[in-house]
Length: 75
Image 1 (cartoon, rainbow, N blue to C red):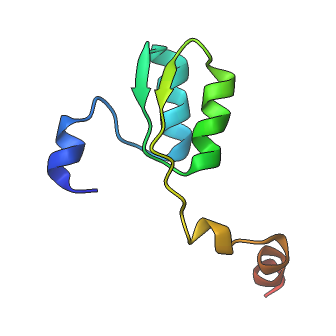
Image 2 (cartoon, helix red, strand yellow; image 1 turned 135 degrees about the horizontal axis):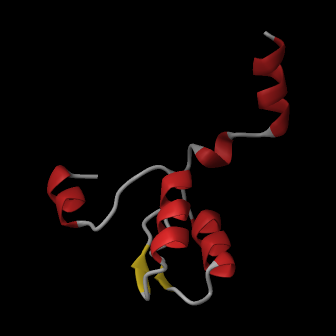
């Protein structure tokens, strides 16, 4: 994300940090720019926050599979 966009955001961070921010601050409205399923999970966990979700599909996350993780772990 461009630095000027991050500078305008109330918060920018990792997946875990975004979940923590919503859980701690409990904002009324959140624009969450992340992978679709992650924002769906946050919406279920914190229904009092109105999540605006542009729903970005991450092609790299879709390449991760359990067999591939197992192969890397066995190396």
